Each structure stands twice: as structure tokens, then as C-alpha cells.
Image (cartoon, rainbow, N blue to C red; front, side, top):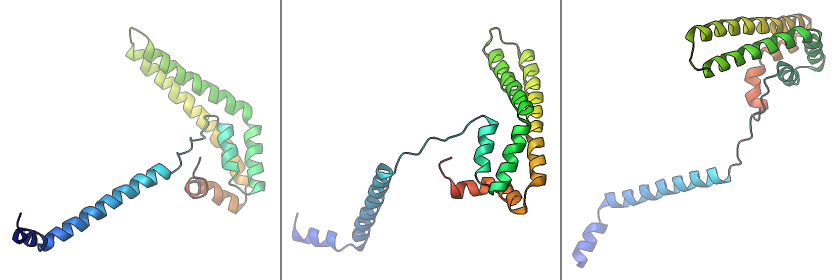
Length: 160
């Protein structure tokens, strides 16, 4: 290669920008790789299917008096809520068993799904009745906190 060719290649303005862009892109990807390597592993979601556990977690975000009202109302209705929750879980398990059966019976599956819908509706009704009764006794800040619990959850408690 002669000196003439070397000077001509170095004098192209696009080559410098291409080199600078490539360097910036490489640094960007290296930064992302380092950030992923240094970032702590996400914590496992601490979600429980039991409605009483979830209600206690929700009550932690309410004013103390309102939290006590909600927990007391859930405990007052505990038998009805536990019963409907067990029926709902049993109906869900019945669907799973029907799906596993051989030969498969679509009619039985549809019937089990209908029973599960009814069980879910009874469960929701029992829980909502307890919440509605507790809410009528809560303070205004407690009702607002209850209404906003989903939106505040992300801001205040990212690990749940």
C-alpha cells in the first residue's frame, strides 16, 4: 500500500463517524451487559391463593383502625368465605381431573366449568359482602386507601 492510498482513506469524513458510531454502540451494549450482570435477581412473588392472607396484606396499607375493621369483618364471615373458597378450589380441581380423563368428555368439561363459575360467584359474593360491610364503617382515608391499593402497590412495595 502506498502513502497515497493511506491518505485518501484517512481523509474520508464518513469513516471517522462510522468508527465513532461503532465505538458508541459497543459501549452501549457493554453497559447493558454490565447492568444485567450486576442487577440482583428478581425476588419471587409472594402471592398466596388464600383470600385471608391477601386481605391481611391489603390491610397493611390501610389506616390502623380501618385495617382492624376489615380484618374483623373477614373473621366474622370466615366460615362462609372458607366454605365457598374450598368449594371453588374443589370445582377447579374437578375441571383438571376431567381434562386428564381418557376418553375425554367435552360435555362433562362444560358442566364442570359451569359449576366452577357458580362456585366462583358464590366465593366472590361472600368476600365482597365482607368488604362492603367493612367499607361502610371505614373512614374516608381508609376507603380511599382501599380504592387505591393496586395503584399504590407498585410505588410502595415492588416485591409483592
